[in-house]
Structure formats: C-alpha cells, structure tokens
Length: 536
Figure 1 (tube, rainbow, N blue to C red):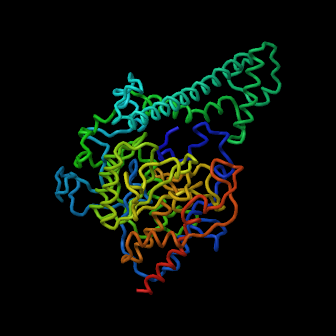
Figure 2: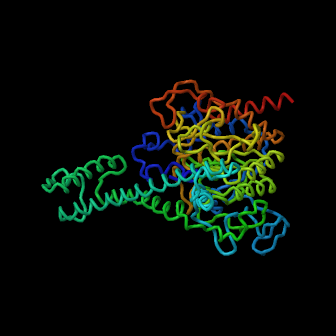
Figure 3: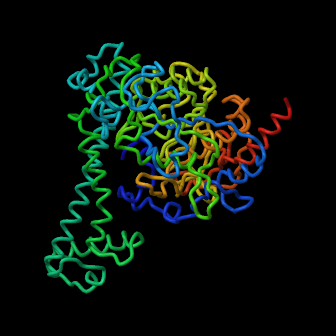
C-alpha cells in the first residue's frame, strides 16, 4: 500500500482492507461537522463556525495558504473565488513578467510538469532507492563493503526487504482478487446463470470437491461484502473489487516497477538539488482530486446555505503548488515548492503528503529553515499507517538532519473522528505529533464540480491549516511561532481512555498520542489570541 498521504484513507475499503473497515469509517456525519463544535453541535469538530461568530465585527486581512499537493481544480465553483492570482504576471503571454523565473505562474507552479506533459504516475521512494542502491550493492557481500559505506549498505538491506515485501504483497492481493473472480465465473457456469446472489449460493449443492470449495469461498465473501452494498450479487462484488484491483495493478505497473521512471518528462537535472527553475504552470495536472478536496476544507465558499459544504477559513487565497504525483513526491520538488510558496507570499503551507524514506532530507530541511526565517507556518500530515512516528520516521518532518534541533514553525497533525476518538488509521507520537484534528468522513470539493467524503490525516491537516488561517487573518501581527503556540495551548484536552490506532486492545490517552494531548479547538484559539493581543 502506498505510503504517500495522497492515498487518503477514504480508499481503505476500495483497496481491499475490508477487515480494517469499521463504523468509524463507514457512517456519514453532517457534511460540515469539521466546522462544528462540541458546545453547540455535540461533535468534536474544529469549532471554526463558533470561532468566526466570536470574531464577528472584526476586520480580517487576506491570508495566502499554499497547498502543496497533486494539483487543484482551480475553476471548481466553490473554490474559484479563493484561488491566488499573481497580479504581477500576465496570463498566457508566455513571458516571465515578474522576473521570478517561472513563466506564466498565474495561480502557482507545477514542479512535476515539463514542456509538453505532466507526471501522473510515479515510483515510490523505496523503489527509487532500491534501484539506485542495487547498482552499487546488489552483488557485494557485507564483509566487502568499505567502512565508509556501511551505513548506506545497511539502509540498502532495509530498503530491499521493504521493497520486495511490498511488491509481493501487492501481487498477492491482485492475484487473490483475480482468483475470486475466476471462482465466480466457475459457479456461473455451474449454475447456468449470468449472475447469482446469496440465495443462489444457499440453494446450490455441489458434489464435486472443487465446487464445494468454490461455494464455501463465495459464501464467505458474500458475508464479507454484504455490509457495503444492498442486493449483493457476484457482479456487484466484482464492481466493488475494481477500484482495489486497479490500485494493485497500478502499484505494480508504476509504484514498484523498477523499469518505470517518468522523470524525463520534467526535463530537469534531477541530481542537481540546487536547480530551482523547471516545471510548468499547469497547477491542475492529472492528479488534482486530493488537492481539490484539501483546498475545499480550508477555503470553500462560506455561503451560509443549509447543507452546503463550507471551508474553515473565511478570507483565504489558495496558492497551488504541484509536487505530488500518484506515487511518492521527490525531495527536490518539495523543497522548491516550499521556497516558491514563501517567495509568493504564503503565510501558511499545507502539506498533506509523506513517505517513510527520504532521498535528500538536507535539501528539504534548508527549505523549511527558509520558511521559518520568513515567518511561514508549515502544517504537515502525520500519516495513515497507524504507526508511532516517535519510532518510525515519516518524511518530511520537523527534525533537522544531524542535529537535535527542530523547526519552530511546524505542526504535525493526526486524525480524529466525530466522537473525538483517534482515527484507527492515524499515525501518532507523544513527541513528534503535535495535535489531532477532524480526519474521518470529511466532506469537501472534488473535481468536476463534485463533492465527496474522504478520510485521512490528509484531511485533518487542512483543518488545522484553516484554523491557523483564521488566526493569521484576524491577528496578523502574530508570528508563525506564536500561532503554533496558540493552537497547541488551546487544544481541547482529552483525558478519557481511548484505543491506540491500529491496536484496539491497547488503551491510552491523547497525551500518549501527541504533544498537546488534545484536539484542535478554533474558538479557544481565538480567545487565546485575543488575550495575547490585549496583553501587548
């Protein structure tokens, strides 16, 4: 399964993890529950509606929030009025009017596009590392490795195991689904039907041992899939399986394919990490689904119409930076994306992506320091593998490589549900995850003027970015570091025992899962900001 947060856990069921699905993921709460509050609505949303009511009558200043992602549908009806426009650039004249090195960057920049096309599918970082290290170590015995290369050699062994395990798991899952479909076709032939349902299975009495096993397997799968669809038949099960099969097929064709490397499309010298000026101005790209959803959570129109999806912040412009394909982002692009956002006025950067291996962490660290020096807040998704980020690193992160220092302008976000419980998929970490925010069944914008519920720390992150934007809108003199302090100090403390993500028998408290010990609370954050303002 991909480690990039673009997989947003809404796809949990579609990707075949049926046994992992629960009522937490399946039930649909109110469309705007992430904006609601416990005090008024009895749900553990961000409380942004309540916060904006508290701020009613105060003047706000527009805040630019950069969404570094896979692209954004900038003409979505609920987003088009909230997309950043570069006033110094003349659209379509194929000139770099503002002399910033990026031609026609009217709404942002695409660092994974080239002269004639854009990257869609990509390798995972583990695949890229495996390919690179294999050239050096595939035929080398450990006792023949120079001391200077020992650490790198052991990393290669780790990468090799992870790559081969993941690739084989994907192949096994795909073959399992293909085998299930073959079994269905066998039973169709035996029944003389084009399709069949559970009743047909109940009345079917095979005598052949192979068909007995086939019936047993299908009965088991009818029970397995019944919660997901009424009137379940063999063909509807195949329909349910299709997204999962497409996922595993694509993973094998692109994510884990050592012979696939689309970087040539960009036309840069990838090995030159100092290179800044490459890409194109296509901020939508072929992978805009995720970024469009993220952007809507932050800033979709606040119409006040009952049932309409609304963004958390009320005066935000989304600056689009495309660096994340269907696969793992590359560190060079992430670093350049951060720098581009900073240089173009972003005060908050939303980063709903991640991976378990870095390629050039130093380059990203330097960009994070650049953002820190320019008073820009970075909000990053903790990950969706129910891992402890204190022991299993997720990248990028706030820790500067080779030091004990960390970025003061970084917020790491875990995901919670409508009842205030940590999402079963969410990563956590008493030291390396800062707080939790709504990330289960979040309704927001998706391409083609549509809306959808998605799950993931990818969704929790823009919830926090949106609340941070409210603070920066109404209290523009506060620094990024102060905004982080406010969000951390104003969390809703949760002291009840809860289940550790991925470990349903292990009871903990939120203090075991994150630094702040609680959930984002926009109204308390606003009150604390007011208090700080009065204290000056």
